[in-house]
Image: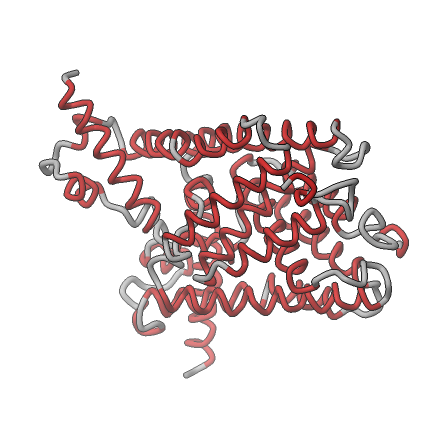
Length: 207
Length: 207
């Protein structure tokens, strides 16, 4: 593959990912993606075997962009564990607000739209989501071991609950076209779920 | 309208709702809906002005069926407030398990798929979701006033967090094709979020 074909493929993925994020997978046509990427009609199958293969590449794109930001926060040991989690919430709040509260989480959108009809997309999404939840779990375990969360907390269940709340908050934000549902969840999780109401100290202790 | 046309319209909505729940809105074609309902090709526009009008009727269908169960639980004052909420979780767990953990929440699915492309569907979904969240809020206020939840809890934020967690748990269940993410959330919410870890008593006190 020459540099040009690599760049063309990446440009199709980048523009296609934006369109799928805005409109959904089924509502985004192949010709529309090629047009947005400035690539001649009919050349899609030179780069991808099928729309499903393209969908897998779109998941990888969001894993390295948005997922990459999550991993960066979760790995930043200069911050206390719950501060890292709040960093993710702060990042999401800015990111979604810039998009007019009008786009959901790419992983959540694709999960609900495609898990029932494409087993390959479902398995890939499930694997990516599993890694994000594991990262949150490691963070909560560290907070528990530091005595910030109760010693008997089930970090695996708690990590899933944090992820579920985040996905649900983004879903509600998208349908309300307002940041308020997201902010309500962020306030609540750090006021009651992950704080001294349930443990020994909250995010505020580490600010 | 004769009884027959009313029944035919209802049958189209019922079968169409099932298909949309299983495959999504965009992936479900009008002909496929008519075929499932046993209605002649081309008669869709006798009953509905557009697919979007049909989508509004699908939301109403799920509001009266699944939403009706939620309202029934939330209004059942023979149970303590947190028991009513757990009743909703128990109902959802049975409902989704019977569907092989393969279908999301109809309101959540449609929100993420359609909020960005149909303003009418978005507004209708947002109104239905707002009512569900208000019902949860009333329940949590009652628990707070009974001294079961902390006196300073923000019932509006907490109700949104419960709804968000529920939607996120169902999303994760669908992509994992397993009930475990849903069960993890149910365990966590009643062990830490709405219980004596944060207040004076949990669901177990009322069993």
